Image (cartoon, rainbow, N blue to C red; front, side, top):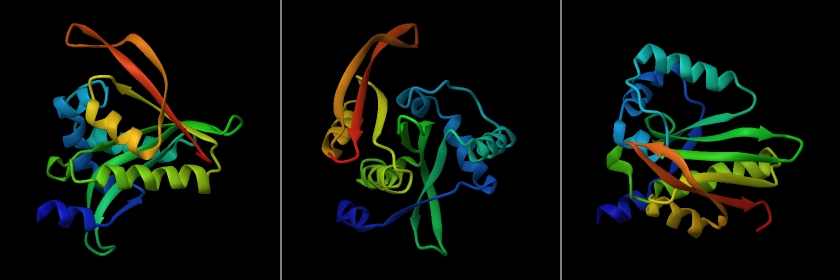
Length: 178
């Protein structure tokens, strides 16, 4: 069965290179995806995507990872994870993720990528806490975060504005030794 196949597939996290800008451009230009991840929607050219990748990769306050599926020699970029607002004094940062290739959503790959990103945050970067913000209407993401061990830390009422409406945002976090 196809679900079993995807569940066995291994993913890896690696630096996103400027050569991946075509995928990034397509994802950043996807209105539905931008709504899901609470990003400002805009048509993004390949040139703008290259600039974004370069900027993210050179910004020491964040770490951008591509989610790749397949073997080292034959891999495909399917999404990204990010650790942002890295605070090396308080040892915390914000987490973000999306699977940009729709045929790879709902297959457990986001969970694997989240776990690998948390491993980097806690064991390589020595973070104590990783937090995130998620739209309360994104029930699939909230369920995933709960499964991984994120806990509810608060609610920002009417915090996110999209399509002439305000939405509540849930704050969630996970600590290193939990």
